[in-house]
Image (cartoon, rainbow, N blue to C red; front, side, top):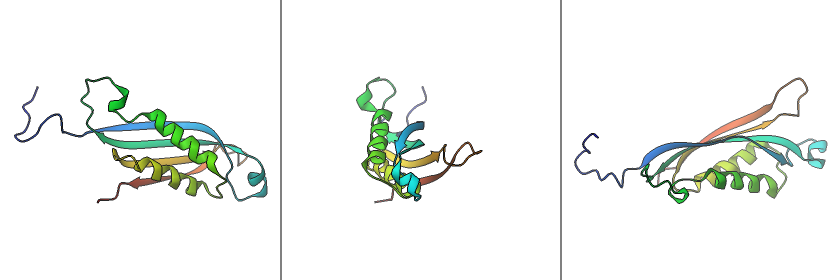
Length: 134
């Protein structure tokens, strides 16, 4: 094992990790057209997070890391809370909630509407947001 640089305590080194949820299928009330306001539609939500935490790589405890299950529940709750005219707004709310966890340094949220345009696998958007410096 390489020697630690002087002044660095291995317990306090923050380790980067990528946590992701890809193509979470949800039903959502989203869109500007009357039919979209009347009926929920299928969307696919993908979330990538750069996480900095103090996980030591040994403990093997869920409470030592960012639980992707909590990210899924947050996304589900946001999507279910109301009608969104734009998937961009929905993505912003998801990104904002993810950055609310102090361990998340960066987030990418992509939302796809797979059933809206005939002959097209999906349409959608992706946004990236970074934690603002304090």
